[in-house]
Length: 356
Image 1: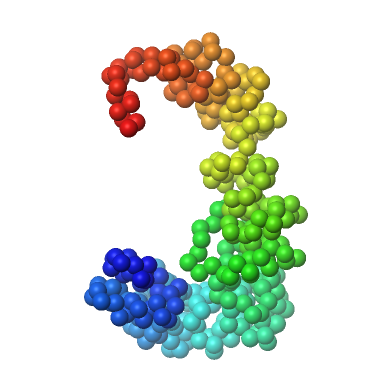
Image 2: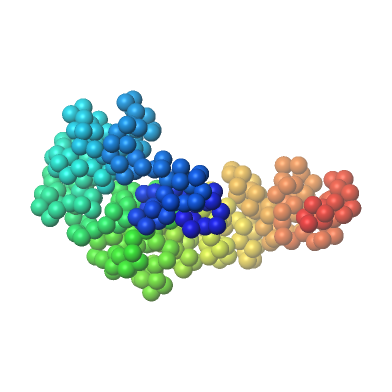
C-alpha cells in the first residue's frame, strides 16, 4: 500500500511502520499528499527513543504498554523501568531495548521475563548459552528451541505456538512479517516438535512437507496442520474435530471436513460430534432417537437430514418446535417449499425477488 494510487491507503500503510523497509518509510515521508506525510511523521516515535519518551504516559495503560512493547526505547526509559520494576515483560520483548537492559533482564528473578529474553533475536552466544542452562524449564526450552542466528520474524512465529496446545492456538492469521519460506521448510524437517508446530501453522508449506506433518507423532503438529493448511487430509480434519472442541466452529467451515461416513459417531458422548454425524446425508437409515436428543444442535441436524422419512418430515413441519429445522431439509421438493411459502403468506414472486 505504500505505493498505492489512493492516498488514504498510503496513509494507512504508515500504521504498520514497524514492518516497512527504510526505503518504504522514506517514500511515505516524502509523499506528495500532506495527510500521508503527517501519518508518517506521527510514527517517528517508533524509531526515535526521545520522541517515544515524550509520548510515554506515566500511568499503567494500554498506550504505555504498546509503546514499551513495540517502539524505540531510550536508555533513560529502560533504566527507569528497571529501577521501578515495572513494564519488564514489555522491555524483554521489545526489539529496541538497549543491550545493558537486556543483560539485566536476563538475570531477573521472574522466569517469564527471562524466557522473553531467551527468545530475542539479538542475543550473543554467551548470553544464550547461559539462558539455555537456566534453572527454569520454560526458559531453557525457549533458549534451546531456536538456535542462532535467528530473526525477529522467526521469534514472533514461534511465540504463536510455544506454551499453548493446538486447541488454544487453532487457525492463525498471517503476520505482516512472516519468516522466510525456507525457515518454515527447515522447521518441518526438524526433530523438535515445537519447530514442527510452527511449520504446521503456515498455510503455504509445500505439499510434500505437509504430507509428512499430517502423520507426525505429535498430535499438536497434526492438529495445527488440520486447522491451517488447505491440503490437510479429510481424515486428519475429522481427527482434529474430535480432539479440539474450541476449534470446531472453524473446522466446520473447511470443505475437506468429512460430512459423510459418520455413522460410527452417532452415539458419541460429545453432542457436537453427534450433531455432525446426524447431518450425514449418506446414512442408510437415520436413528430417530436423534430427534429426541438432549442437545438442540443434534435435534436440528437430524431434522435437516435428507434421509428422514417423508411422513415424519411432514409431521415435523407441522410442529412449531421443529418446523424451522425441518424446512431446511434438502429432501423437500419445490412443490412442498412453495406450499410452505404460500402458508406463510409470502406473495408470489417475493422470495425470488429477495434472492435476486
